[in-house]
Image 1 (spheres, rainbow over the protein chains, first blue to last red):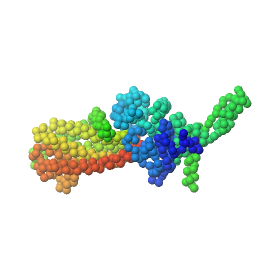
Image 2: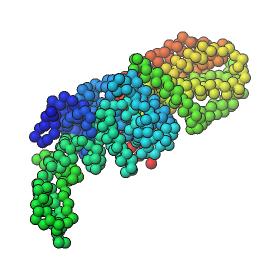
Image 3: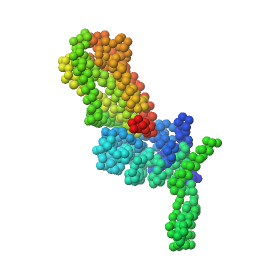
Image 4: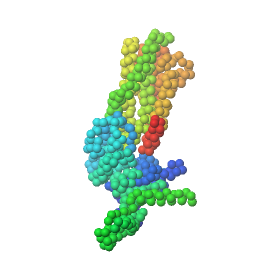
Length: 313
Length: 283
């Protein structure tokens, strides 16, 4: 059983199946703390989005976990290993999707993926054969027709899909994606979301991604972490977060051409009573809980105000 | 299977692929043609000039010297330039994200830089031989023509990599390597025998690899009588090996630590910052 604390999500300690475990993470540049006190856990198979305004420290957090950046303080465990001391065996178990730009421009798509995949051969295990079949993977990310193209001739979206394929080629147990869909058109974004669902369902891959797109966070994540002013200010599913901000749902309806709005903690009961009283007269019924956007705004705003008060005090 | 040895083997394959890319890339080929043309023009101008105290045309001395110098250019500028570019464009970060990817990257780069340099040297040599039939009749010190360039690359490549890992942009990598190379070439007896220069300048030149590379290749391509034009009238093979070897040893001791430090600092946001800077430089 998962240990739940008062707010309805797993407590940060004692999670035996934690793939990522972060406590008291602090990151200081000069005299400025980008991360003040970040703590969270990620369990095997979860899809987690790290959401937050620009400059909140999302990229810094993910780079610490990837082992690409040294932290100032705190306890961090990724697949049971401190990323600052992660060896290449550890490296082989995680996948990093980079925001590539124009590297390997002369390589052909298939050649590069095959080459990068080969580095994982010594780390193959019977349960997790590495690397992935390259052609299958290219088909999965929708690049099957472009295997012989040189990278320099790919469009931005095609390149991002190759980035995802490169991150996946070693069949990672844990995958990091920093703003994976930046610059995607809606169709590519939909395809990418399908891919993430498939990975987590079929391969039991744990996924941690950052985004500032609320709809994306809501669509993809089992759990959302909101990072603001260097702290995790919220941790839970989209529904849980919404309930934290507001327990009230808004019910709208019309009757005899007149419009009504009513706020209630128990919308289901209210609507049942509404129909019992007026039956067919009720029209245009709408029940609206606080959206993720409302939640996000409320939480980020609350945090920023707290910071301001601290500064002026 | 040892993963490091395995990655080194992947690096060999990688180096070969990148060599093929370079040799079939119009831009790179154009650069090679340009370099060879410049040197051929220099040789043409020097064809009828002779060196004081010798019957040899100046061009016959210059051709081997140019080959020696080009080894140093490839080692310093080639390594620094590609490393700076590949830090900026994310190639290095990509290598860092795969297990033992840095090993593969470095082996690949050493292989491709060496092969591409060899290719250019052979073209310069062939062009020179066609132009200067005198050379074809001289004694061929093949062994020298193997160990001098190899040791020369070892003496220069690590230092080029050190420079490339420290500079902020590919442009500064170019400046940081090309300016010293031009200055050293001017005093290293590449385009005119060093014995014509003042003693203290000769002293400075003999600290750096370019002079010894020129001397070494000359000793391999020129008749023994031509040694009379050199400092102390000898080819000084032992000293050549000692100076180049010392640079190589020092470089191989320093470079891995510097490169490791550089690799540790590579991250997505560091690369993004450089990308933004690049976009600002070239709107």
